[in-house]
Amino acid sequence: MSADRVVQLRWESRHVAGDGGAALSYPGISVVRSDHGEIVDRAWIPVGEEPTFADDEALITALRDAWRWTRPAA
Image (spheres, rainbow, N blue to C red):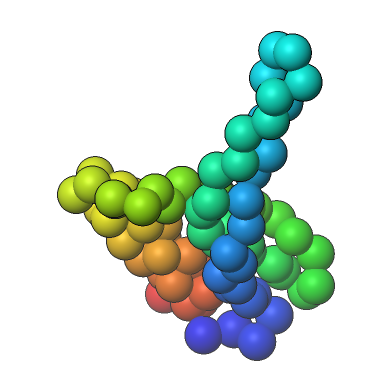
């Protein structure tokens, strides 16, 4: 693993303003990739109160890809 490449997980909500002033908030997890302190990628995966199998698989895939990104190429 490279000390220059860092992956962070953050609990974040996305806020969407609707018509008539109503706002919706969606909870989720951001997978943030940084290289030498600069953010190079951010993926946001929604997390509902009743996550589906597809939700779980999307999060596992994002985490696996982020972990592999931190490893130097062979």
